[in-house]
Amino acid sequence: MMRLFYLKECSSTHDEIEKFLSNDTLDLQAVYTFNQTKGKGQYGNSWESGRDLNLAYSVAVPDELIKLPNHLFNFHTAEVLADFLAILTKQIAGIKWPNDIVINNKKVSGILIEKKIIKGRSYFLIGIGLNVLNENFTHLPKAGSLLTQTGVKFNLESLTQSLHEYLVENLTKPVSEESVMEKLNERLFRKDLISVFEIGQSRQNGIIKKVDKDGFLWVELENDGLRKFFHKEIALLY
Image 1 (tube, rainbow, N blue to C red):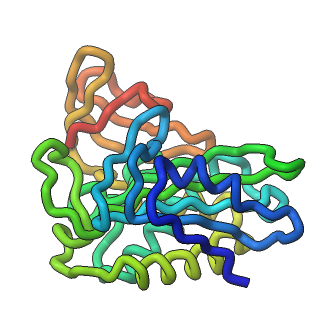
Image 2 (image 1 turned 135 degrees about the vertical axis):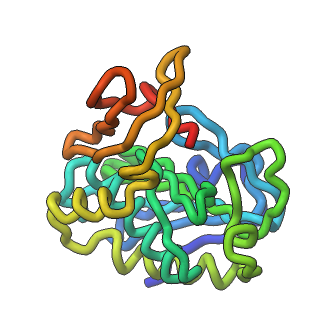
């Protein structure tokens, strides 16, 4: 059964999804809008979105359907979304650690995942912000949209339906921890390329080597050698 609910406007689909959950089903349940006024990003960041230009989508996945550790399910979700966008755009969709999606060197999508008990059942709440039709990123030089990165004007409604169907079909498919890590490292943005990183107050050249099974990013730094980092401990400046 397709449990996908449209909201004409909301502050955040991630806040609204809880109102639509029904515990009489194990189906994935989702809400979406093309006018989100206060979107949430990972680690307290915000997700900017203009009216009728972008998609804000949140889906609730019952925890009992997922057999992966939490952080690996985060990576698996990013892989599924990257696969969908690669098929849709016929472009390479990379994963910028930990879970942003990049097409042609620009971030087009971000993911927020929280685990929460609602009405007595544990859920993964997955929020996806996808830039679709906006073209003005003068204040966000690392961002882009499907339009700016592919030249294609996708229909927001049909895109949403296709995305939801793809997530419902693929998010809960059995997958091994090994295959999640292998696919993540295959899609890892800027892997094996010289990049500039910000660590604390300093900048340094380095090369991304891998993400390990505990979620750490390993970088070979020009001055400090091979080091591992967790979220927010290092910033990729390209």
